[in-house]
Length: 188
Image 1 (spheres, helix red, strand yellow):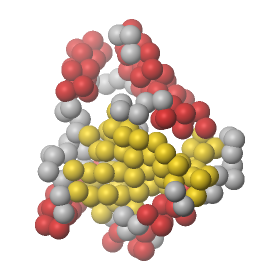
Image 2 (cartoon, one colour; image 1 turned 90 degrees about the horizontal axis):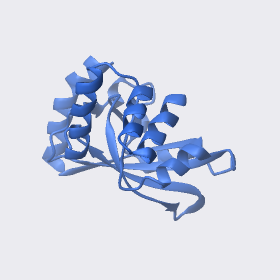
Image 3 (spheres, rainbow, N blue to C red; image 1 turned 180 degrees about the vertical axis):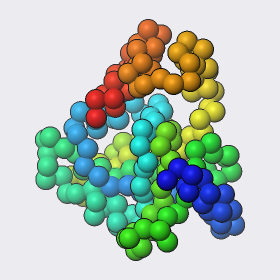
């Protein structure tokens, strides 16, 4: 999947840049309340996705997948809005997979595993107060904040390390809140 996504990435980027300087996509889903609270507590920080992330250009599709908040208090209905600045060179591929998907009408855009996002804000969706609205911004892997940390970890642990090991290093460095986020991601 990664190789195919990489092939499609450059073509997709070129196509988007012809029409816009930004790409906005959405993802709707129910997430555990604890996970949602972790996101709320980390506005301004970066989170990394440890799987492929399927999104859509159609906000209504995301709303459909988010649910209506009926699973509370165990789960929270969330819509993620992801803003991609097309002027920034991205290190993780993403592309439109609409032509490859069984669900052609969902206008799917797939992000590679390991993509990083800055949490910009967490609010309620205006049309539906039971649905949370999280704004994210796609980051490059080379932001100063993550690059320095990555270099330290590679120097200490080598290229192959788990989320748990990464969390341990963050904890030792005094980044307790960030370590907690990655510990929780490892448990999922």
